[in-house]
Amino acid sequence: MKPALFDYVAPETVEAAVAALAGDETARPLAGGQSLIPTMNFRLSTPGRLVDLGKIESLRGIAVENGSIRVGAMTRHRELEAHGAANAANPLIGEVLDNVAHIAIRNRGTVGGSIAHADSAAELPCLLVASGGTVSVQGPDGSREIAADDLFRFHMTTTLDQTEILTEVRIPALPPATGYAFEEFARRRGDFALAGVCTLLTLEGSVCREARIAACGIGARPIRLAAAEDALRGRVVDEDARSEAGEAAKEYMTAPADTQASVAYRRDLLAALVRRTSETALKRAGR
Image (cartoon, rainbow, N blue to C red; front, side, top):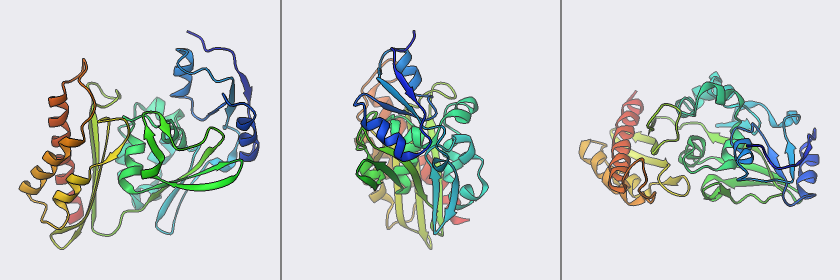
């Protein structure tokens, strides 16, 4: 199929892009286009105007400073995946991006576009939630910061206004003595995962001082698994603790049964991913 007719503009500044969005309530920003264009081709999305962000140079680039990885919204997935300094500061980034679709998609898809699209099964929103990251957005009334926990509202729905553009993503560097892991399960490599889990464990001696666990593909948005975190925090992360965390995670599975899996299977899958990522993160923290 072909998309419905639309106007096309390609501004060279964020301010001009915001003005173009404000001029048409059906307008949508175009970043990498890996998600938006297919929905337009199927007429699931029919914007009256596309505002192409590709010419805005200020939306590109990666910087590691003051304990944070700052990523311009138009930075390609592959650029971030291969960025040495960013991955040294937070190795979870590369591990997550290695699971995003295929290299051809990562060469075109953008970090900001994926997060703003907010697919509930997408890996980057899960990373942002688990890491406690933030995004910067700009609209007609100026710029503002949004914490990851406050950004994602529902599947493909965020707290951004239609006239706002996501300009930068900030991912914290890993604290000392922190282990990390990401695993997901999909029927085929590159497919949307039935579930994915990001785990960060900070140790103090042999005890888990802090745990941050987030999952994607299990509900309407990426979500922190608070009960699973509580099962690990303040304890030695042994097999019993990991099993308790996995069992606690099951309550967060709200995805319905479908042709891919039953609800019971999805719950067991989520529990297994929590156990496995906790074990991997523990080993890495010990190093």
